[in-house]
Length: 340
Image 1 (cartoon, one colour):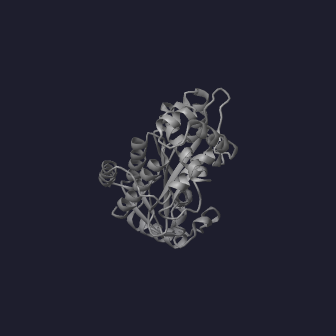
Image 2: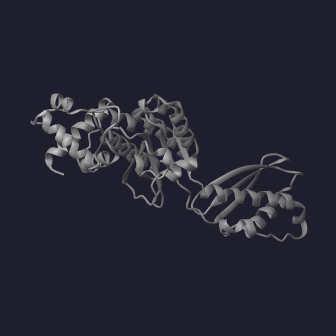
Image 3: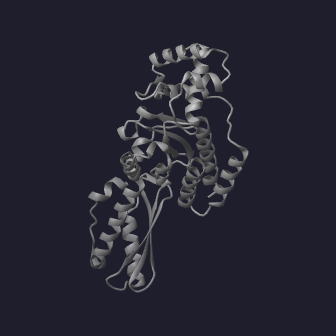
């Protein structure tokens, strides 16, 4: 594409980002100093339409950018200097530093922050843990009828549960029960718990129901390790966008975003730390997302795991600014996690 077509296309995109109405050659000629006549702009717009960069709504003489135009715009912008305002950057750093009570609170705060700044529905994906083997079991009597059970994975995940006891367990029996559980369960791969059989002897037979309950807890821990948690914020923000004044359309995308599995499926796979992905309109695999774009970034949880954050908004979005916001939030989320 020659330089003149690029300048005209960029002018149309900027105009449509400001006001979502079809753009005509007269408007571009009056508001953008491109050094060419309205007739020349009109001819170039016709060529851009033929090339697939512009669409012409049936009810208007003007044109609107296509998904292909936005993709060209994003690719052309890549590598240019970040333009996020200093006040926004300082605000992001300040809020993420304050939320240092737990990783869950930090993820929730990051989602709230993304939604607050962008005004788009925001998501944080906390990936599955790397724990694969049960490392340790601890039992602590809380009272005569309740027992605190701690299950510890080989990569540090800890599951806490309180079991109700059918009868009081004396100190010696509790010690032997813990020993038997560690002997039979520790070192076992999580994937094997479903088929695990423990042979009880002597005094331990009467505690079979407790042992069964603890094995069930280990199976539950397996599912927790494999799960990708999704933290979302501002799903109703979609209703404030001009593109979703049609309630049926708004209801469809809202229902889609409510299901964590849909969000996990929409996010790109096999991402590397520092990568920003922009999935525009029809590039999304789910049809309900074809009038939306997804901008995602990556953050480091530890040396082995990478999580993702992102926002869903209309195809008509200020991509450079949104990309900058997502990038800065992701970078500072990584920093905050490392000091937890």
